[in-house]
View 1 (cartoon, rainbow, N blue to C red):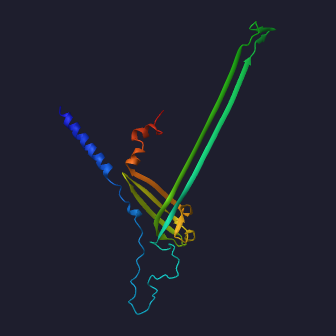
View 2: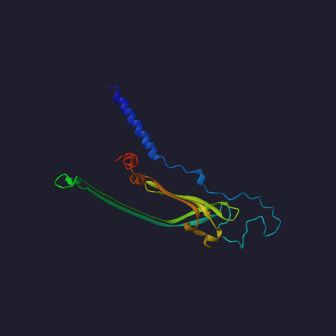
View 3: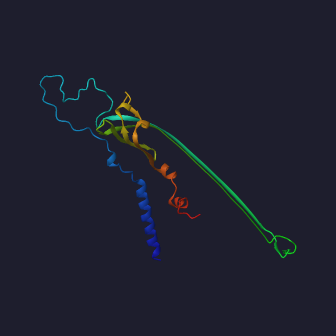
Amino acid sequence: MKTRPVLATTLLVAAAALAGCASNAPRVDPAWAPTLPIAQAAPPPADGSIYHDAQSMELFADPRAHRVGDILTIVLAENTQASKKAETSTSKKDSTDIGAATLWGKSFPLNGGKIASLSGDRGFDGSGSSSQSNQLSGQITVTVAQRLSNGNLVLRGEKWLTINQGRELVRIAGIARPEDISPDNTILSTRIANAQITYTGTGSLADANTQGWLSRFFNSKWMPL
């Protein structure tokens, strides 16, 4: 009779743990925090002049992002399609007949029939096909994390969207040329080298579209059947 309270306590603890896991929001990764501009020296004291070199008064400069900490918008225009098809067919057929033996002018067996007959027929047919299509569109504003020695810019940023009972995350990182940035301070994702794009979600909708651990086991390579 003492096992029932123990079992009930265990179930309550497990339910509380699951509820805690479900209610905890995903933690923000510090590695994806916005990059702040490089600290600059304090401007010189005012001496009556209108313009100073140390002050940020870029009257004729290009407004496109080019320094660490600058902001620019990446236009997601990813559309990939891939397909593969393979077919294999082989066939082989063998036939062997052993006639009657002849000894002293007489055939054995006497009826002149075949002693043995062998035949074989083998064949194999195999085919396979695979296709995949992905599409991602939208916009995400990021910051310049680093400026390389050749002038290229390392971009990095993320966006969190909270919709009803779920959260969606978009992350992107890569290297871009300043020449590929449009005059409106935007750049296509297809112009970013070594791009790493992540699109995922958490919450009730994401859980509903995810297989359980038991279903994943039966669909995994470890399943012998």
